[in-house]
Image (tube, rainbow over all chains, first blue to last red; front, side, top):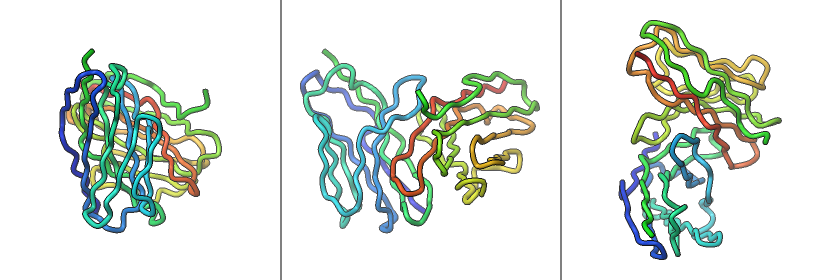
Length: 113
Length: 113
């Protein structure tokens, strides 16, 4: 089955700096890779996703890149703000196979002003 | 707001008691998922339904756990003879079969004392 590794587990940056979180996956058949943001006491909220037929996707300050050959994908947050502080999770899924989303263990991002 | 709704949000129970959580998915979403999340970890897949059919169950779903979705709308997750190790947040999520995005609820916190 799918296994997702996420690094780093914690990340501290200054406001305005960039933050990068990296994930690797094991199942080459996985074709859908979302990123979720989770604030304390709340459920995960989707912030961006990428499908295997695309190498990069951007939405304002957030971008995700995917390298299918190496089986890794990354989240990039530019111009970080204190409200970006949260736990971020990557996940992988083989959508058409009807398999479930498998999550990494999360990265706690702290943005200090 | 017609997002994924979970009830109760918090439950404290004594070891050995049974507990039941309810999830109301987003209207017309035909897939419904249950995940468990412990502190410092990513969500772990438990089971999912497509309409009324339970299509996949994780090995984490022991015999004491049972999930139902009788009419293909709301779902219940019951834990019998609770143990302290069952203490966690139980997350429900839903999606449309033809779309990638999976939406999570705010979770139901379980504390077994």
